[in-house]
Image (cartoon, rainbow, N blue to C red; front, side, top):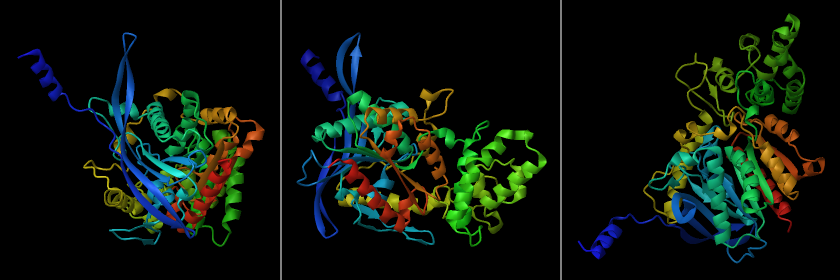
Length: 491
């Protein structure tokens, strides 16, 4: 075989490198009698890495294909038009929840507690979409949605704290550069672990790329895992979850006719002072002190005094959701404790599934799969990974070996370096995954000068983790976010 033929055969056998497969389509929506013409761009972009061999640059090679959906307002001035990069958490979750639940121009009608929408569900225009105030880019991290590592690469490299931040940060940099948006006001919107990612990204984008942001939208925030991890020797979560337990008990009628505000005020006071003291005392509590603590904790949570005493005053959250309405043979939703459901064994300590997740997951999954193909004209035979349990259970926090996971130091550093950075924190009173009092605790301990505390705003809603499932909360939250983006854009 000639050299030319050999070279031709080698070229033919070499698989083609992956390329971006973005699809654009025109759309319009009417918001407050104003018609907005916008362009949707959806598909996968290829992330590449630099190869250095023996100190010599050896080119860029593909490493992952990341799926995104962007919405840009037609005819807008890119130097004045804000852009918001949005993602959910998990880790292992796609961005479908913020995309079709709250921010995007189309939303799924999933229904709510007691009136869930039956399949095949429905998509409608979102008249409260943030697109009226900001362009939007929804990002699915590697192994979620349609995002995947390329052939020969290890997906696990992206299933961890730092690898995730670097890859999502690279997507943001690429999109910003390719679309000429370096001079646009820029925001990150994260939910749940997405707030952990957002806190780390704010610092990473500044220090790695010199990209300074205007604002962070933190929905159902978790910035310091010490506030949430019920580990031996860490009593902090038992106190910080207490006001949420009280709110849940009130919602389910266990506080009689007492106003919720009164119940929460009492729970917050006990959680902030006497309860941490009682936990810290251990067996140094006198019998009377312990009895008083048991009685008060039982009254606030709606649990029996016997149960509170048996768990040594330490009510773990999933055990709480399983126990509270056991006498009614119901379990309570973790993500949204307004929801209740059934289980197969009412003697168990931990419910086998979260009824608030199963209640809405089918609607979001169906709507997303229909929407991408039928309305955005993007075909893909891969399964769209709404929430990957495998990614979640294998997530690496190796950067925090022998320490708890926190991005409070990174967020505080970003705020100190960029005193114009605004932070909006949204919490649901009935969120049993990321309790509002834990967020308040973290914000109060953020290491920033007093003059920067005015950059932080908070909002509270009458629902859970995805508070926008509750229609009044969705409408109010949409306005809150519009006001925040408008104000923080310095326009």
